Structure formats: C-alpha cells, structure tokens
Image (cartoon, rainbow, N blue to C red; front, side, top):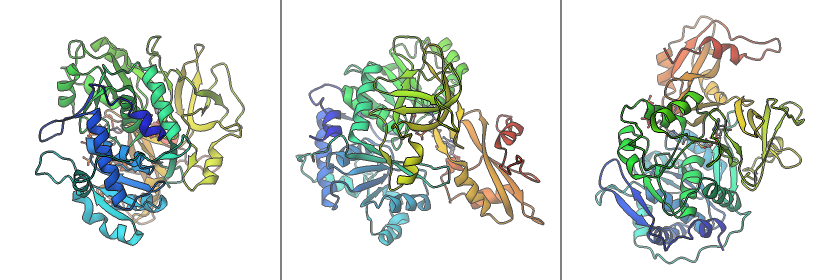
Length: 510
Ligand code: MLC
Ligand code: AMP
C-alpha cells in the first residue's frame, strides 16, 4: 500500500478526464487509466535514472500534465517530490538542490545548459521534461525515456508517516526551509477538502494555478484526483482563456488576483458562470470588497479558505452555511485551531487578536535538516505556530488581521524581505535597506525597497534594479526603489517598517 498514490488514484474506472489546453498546439485528453499507465512509465523511467525510495527528486519544469504525472510517479516509487518555482534563478536553485541533497534534478529542456555544471559539481543527475505542444516540440529526455518504458510498475509501499514531498518556504532569516510533508498529511487534507467542498466525479475544475506550490499542486490537483473529478488544465492565468472556459466548468480555485482581474473584465457576468457551483480563493487575503463585488456581478459568494505550505488547509468558509466576507471560515474537520499571545503563548479568547496555532493530521512534521527551527515553531503540545495574526468571532470564524512574521504576499507568492534586503545591501553604495510590502492594484501587495546610501554615494534606482535582475526571481524584485536619508528606528534600534509602509502606501497605486 502506498498511502498517497493509492489514495489519490482509486478512480480508474470513472469517465472523468484531465484535459490540457496548452498556449500553443492542440489540447490533449487523459482518462484516469491513461494517467495511471503514464505514472507507471514515468516510474520506470525514474528508476532507470538511479532514484530510489526516500531520494529527493527536485523538479523545475513548465506546467503540463506530464509534470503532474512526474509528481505522481515520484510518489509511486517512494521518492520525495521537491517542486520548484519556474521563476527561480540558478543561484536560488543551487541552495535547494544542495540543502535537500537531491538525487535527481528535472529541469526544462531549454534550461539544461544553465544547470549542467552546477549538477556536475553537486553530483546530482540532471534530466529534462518539457511541454508537449505537438509531436515536434522537445518534451525532454525523461518524456522520451518514459515513452519506451513499461506501463506496469509495482508501486512501492509507503506508510502515512513516510515523506511524499518537501516544499521550500522562505525563512525570516532569508534562508529557505524545506517543509516535510508526509503521505498522511497530503491525503488526509485532500479527503477533507473533497467532502467539505462537495467535489465529485461530476465536477470539472478550471486549473490555472502554478503547480509548484501547495495551492495548485495539492489543494487543486489532489482534491480533484481523490474525488475522481475532471480537470481543465491551463498553463497559467490569462483572462481571455479563463473567460473562454468558465462556461464549461463547475469550479475554479484561485488567488485573489484571479478574482480582481476577472472583475476588471466586462465579460464577467452571471451568464458566463451559470454552470459554476464553486469559486474558491486563498493564499492571500481576499478583500471584503472583492467578495461583495464578485457576488454582485455573478451571484456567487467566493468561498475563502486559509492554509500554508507547512499545514495544507486549516480553515474554510462553509459550503452550505454562511460565507463571511473578510474571514477565512471555520477549522476544517480534524483541525484544532487556537489563538495565543504571540509573545508568551498564553491562550486568548473573546475575539482577542493573537497568533494562530493549529494541530491536526494536515500539519507537517518539521523542516528538513533544521531540528532547532522546527522546535521553535511548535508548542510542546504539538500545536504549530503559523505566524499569522487573527481573531475568532462569536460564530467561530477566523479573521486573519496581520502577520507576526515579516512577510510580503504578492499575487499569492511569498517574499521574505530579509532575502531581498541582503541582496540590496550588497549593491555598491548601499549602506542599508528595508524591504516592505505596500498595496498593489493587481498583486494585493507589491515589493518596495527603501535604501540609504553610504556617505558620498548617490544611488541610481534603475542601475540597482538591473544589477539584481538575474540574481533572484523576478516576482521578488522591488517594483520601486526609494532612497532616503535614514531608516526610521524605534528606541531599541529596530527599523519601523510600519512607519515606512504608512509613508509609501500610495506609491504603487498612483
Ligand atoms: C508575476 N509577476 C509578479 C507576480 N507574478 N510580481 C509580483 N508578484 C507576483 N505574484 C511579475 C513577473 O515577474 C513579470 O515581471 C510581470 O509580473 C508579469 O509576469 P507574468 O508571468 O505575465 O504574470 P502573470 O502570469 O500575470 O502572473 C500573475 C499571477 C501569478 C498572479 C497569475 O503570479 C500567479 O499565478 N500567482 C499564484 C501564486 C500561487 O499559486 N500561490 C500559492 C502559494 S501556496 P516583469 O518585470 O519581468 O515583466 C500558499 C498556501 C495556500 O500560499 O494557502 O494556498
Ligand atoms: P505559503 O507559505 O506560501 O504557503 O503561504 C502561507 C501564508 O499565506 C499564510 O501563512 C498566510 O499568511 C497566507 N494566507 C493563505 N491563505 C490566506 C487567506 N485566505 N487570507 C489571508 N492570508 C492567507
């Protein structure tokens, strides 16, 4: 028994299908049996590269059904899947490969040259997987080898506690931490979400999220698989394509930017979404006004839920009961949630604001090779300290009001200011920097870097931005840099980011 693989793919006899609509080329359709056969082929191809149970398979590839098949095949052979954002640069990737001691790295065919010497140096086997738009496109070495491999594969047995995936989430010190997610963590959450959100074999989910994070990979894909639903797989968010396909789906999951962009489109109306039964939002705060506007335009109340990489999904507004705008709903079945004083951990009640803590089968077991960090973020009784600040209303609904962690969430991607500050501080003439998130009309929050120059230096915003262009992923880079005389500090010498956020709150909206 392989807990996650067998748990997700029980539905091979169903009519449900996965349809891939690429940005170029023609669509492809997979039945569940096709998916299972393909995981067998990919499992054999992975074994041929030398991967064994427990090995880390790191993957940075464009979105495709084969990328999902690769995830399922890695789980099927008992390996640990490590998905990586396609926006990451070579130096960012180096850290993950090294920290996780990956056995195999699968990259996009067009990026192989960039990674060759790195993988040689680290002793990691490198292979490729591309997007198969038509029979002439380079679908990669792993695809070619899977095509010739046997579809039969003896699934490797894995228990609930065995690791299925490691997902890196950035740390407050600027160093990323690998959240270890077990077969039990992932399957239990998928089963709960399927029931809570009423997913069944008659559903078709519109999937436009990236598949290297919890939202697109686990919440959307695992829930679809476990319910035996169909999936309409788009390469990413494109308003025209979403509008084209909304009439033929029953559900969509997205980050708030999806919903604000749809609201900006005059084609969004009640008729367009008449076959949809559920819109889900998460990964970042959905403004209450977006919730209200969306209902006015479409008649649908978006269902907002709350989770994180370390915990999968924790809370959700109800399917049948009241969906309260500005809240993230009630604890999911099996999840215990409480609010505590961020400083001393004492429990709070009566709607007081504190740090949100959770415990349950969905919560990860710790950070890869970081026992000290793991210990710091769990209470003795097993509750995980999320770092999100919230309070619970009289009906038990959680409202997230802020973050105890210094974190920016831009378009659903997390950016840890420390990582960007370290890079800005290295630039010639920069004495110090503070990176903040301020309101952004499209991404919710946008990154802004505040710089102080060394004596006798004058800083050029564009030159610094162009210097860091290839150093970190584009979405982490400041949308603007501002040079000031000195950073505001409190009496303890700590930079007062709230003062800066206040001062520059209109910088990206004007
Ligand atoms: C792209 N850009 C961003 C950005 N996305 N900048 C800041 N924040 C973002 N999120 C930049 C690009 O670098 C580029 O810059 C320019 O914007 C246009 O890029 P694009 O690729 O054309 O953008 P687009 O495809 O429109 O992407 C926007 C988006 C995407 C919102 C659709 O970011 C997205 O899919 N976000 C979802 C993230 C997600 O899945 N999060 C879940 C995490 S899991 P330039 O300068 O080069 O032009 C999690 C747990 C949970 O949080 O609870 O779910
Ligand atoms: P990640 O580490 O990428 O998984 O991001 C998790 C973080 O996203 C959480 O700790 C929250 O800060 C935030 N988040 C997720 N869902 C919501 C939501 N519905 N409302 C507000 N914040 C959210």
